[in-house]
Image (cartoon, rainbow, N blue to C red; front, side, top):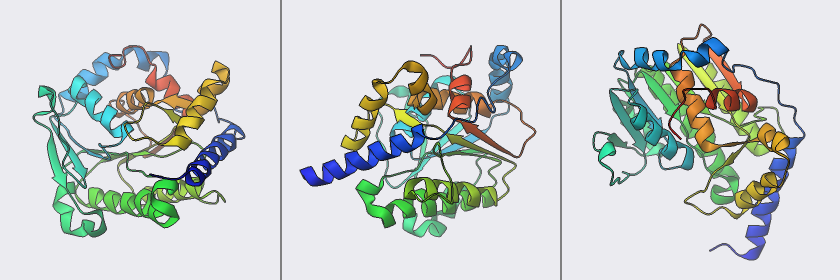
Length: 276
């Protein structure tokens, strides 16, 4: 268990990151849904189901990935669902019985190229923290693992790659977390997927299975702010997931799309979105 000094450092770092986000302006609604798109969601989802597409999820053991998997199964959007991770997950619910799982060694991903073959859509929710893995470990997971996975997915035929990033991501940032997020965004874009969607949520609001004292402090901090401020710089995980799935069924002309926190709120709350 981490000592008081380590916990204080983690809390201070998390709060500093939150304050940095507050200093950044949200660029506006961006790719948020029009009224016509909102009203047509049910039809879009039905049309999408008819295409019998397959999907993989990276990071399904994390909070966002876990919720994403649950909602994908509830919606029945894909004919095949595959989890790619370092260990096999166990599920008690009947709904998970047909979920495929590929166990890989992220340090030797080239040896597991077959796990990334044959998927139409990919969702990457991989991530750790500097406090948990150290600076080098954080960069290895959030940048190197993600980029190598994206490369193998592209080679394996993936057409639409969805990346969970962060509000404020900037490869030129002096803040390691935002710098790494910005670097991987840019590197994945260079792979030229047919469609590449980047989600930049603010502070993710959730009840993590894994205890992270620093993030708990940040959630409390945002919870004390007026709703208008909090919604500009934070977002519930379930809203992010709903935005991801509402977005994936929308036909888009752009090869690359960037959804900032405001657009995620708009799209995730769109009428006709997933069950609460």
